[in-house]
Image 1 (cartoon, rainbow, N blue to C red):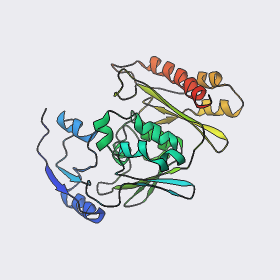
Image 2: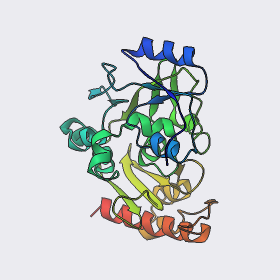
Image 3: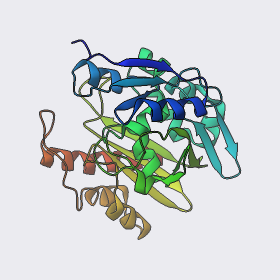
Image 4: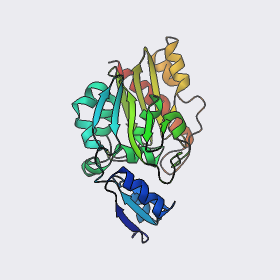
Length: 269
């Protein structure tokens, strides 16, 4: 399908982006990689009146370690994250996730900031941000990930607010991300991320609710000395996942349990 008509503007820097968003009004949208927004526009599920392209804004891509934080620019491409020796050393789980996003074309153009701002519960990076208590730094403020993902496609971002970077804790320890999907390039029907951090395990669930989630009952079981199998059995405690054409709620709960056990076992193998 063809998108509805819209105005296109290209920002030269962040101040210009903010000015344009204010000028164009609340129905304008930011264009980063476009691999989430453009398909919705083609289906006319999203009909912004204008797009503000950040593609040439300087200083919004790249990664760096800052003390105990890995700071990732919002326009950093998936392919850059997957290949970066800095990311592989400081937070290899992020590099592994990036390598699993979409296909080669998507990884070459899609951006981490676009995925975070889109807030799709089937997205990989929101799960990582939530489970590791990342911070989303914008042109206005710094949002804790726990407060950022409010509902499906819903965040506290203001109409003229732009993500600058995402700050993750440095976590080079045991990790694994497992996605169940029909085809190699599909979104996860369910995904589970496991990361050893600060002497314990963090477990994140993808596409098990309207936002990314923590498998807190499974985390608590591990803290009490439970095995991977025992923790996996608790992974769906309290879950109320959606049912859709790809999976029922019961099947998603089953996948959460199975994939949690698998992620833990493979992380410690």
